[in-house]
Image (cartoon, rainbow, N blue to C red):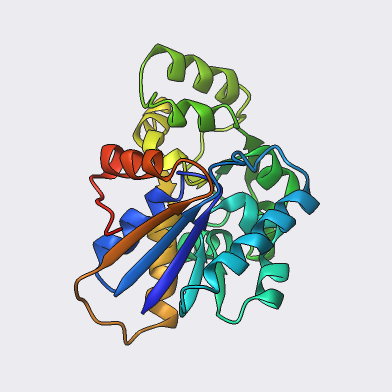
Length: 251
């Protein structure tokens, strides 16, 4: 399959890493809207408008599937994107909840959802979790993590202080932490180690791969080509991909 991956910036690279590691896709076309990142602080209508422009971009590549590797877009724009696209569109939120369902977590155990203001404010994670029987849910916006990851701050005093700022308000130590932003896996180990009980993490990239393997069971392993595109400074996107994940572009 030739697939597209859309993100508001560079965070979706953590999803790309999982897709590459699977070796199940012939070609991956990645588009980051780096000129207008971040999406997490924007209003719903703006997020939808930008996302529909991305759909038009991917129509140029004859893709067979579009993976929306952005929780904010997945929370607000998927229905409209599906209306406009001539290919299937899948997001990371439903797959993240599915990954939780496939785990050994008791439905009364505490879950913490963290993400951008737009993702948490949409209530989509909270509602899906409740619909699936989970009863002990806390959700909080942790938007400061996004620029920190963009700046390459993956550990240290600044990150520790920011985690204290957010997590001091968590009432019960979580048994699962849903990383509701694709930037967050880059600091996932630090988030996990913040708590004594070392909660397990739900990572968008791993979750979307579980989901895709389920709906496309006949995919075969092989060589994967990846091409990077950005609305601004594509060279920086390629540099970040190489620095973060060791990924080289084929364009």
